[in-house]
Length: 205
Image (tube, rainbow, N blue to C red; front, side, top):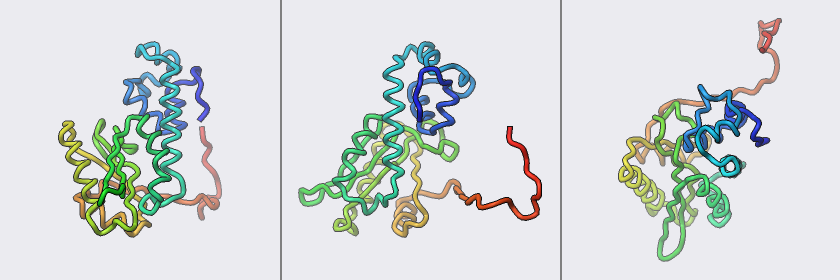
């Protein structure tokens, strides 16, 4: 995302959904006040423009790291450390699981859900999570989730959300067994041509 102080808050929010999470955290109105430039919005909220841009860039980097083509359940633990540092800079909380003195699992609690329509505003979201293959079946993942739920309860939250790749055979049974329930479905379609029976095209404005 090309980050400039002259862009409007709405433009930045539309370009990257991570911007909306930063704006919500900082109290910047990107809806009704979305026609303001980032510089003007920062001035209105008494925020330093350079610090806001840094937060936006770090959040974008963290999102890119989280969306890499990898399976978080099988990714080497050491490879996640740098990415989790970036998430922490964006306001995330990290939980580390140890077994017999060895680090075997990580769980990230992010301050807001990337899909707030499925979870009340201002409620936390469980982001990148991983357990070493050799530590599975020993309760590590469930211990991390239980700790995350305890953290959320102690901080006054009522809900916590998570999303996962339905193609991952480990994810669905794990999260449903942990008490999570479906709140919605995301669907995807490849645009591989004009739909049958649609000879014309609708103009986009």
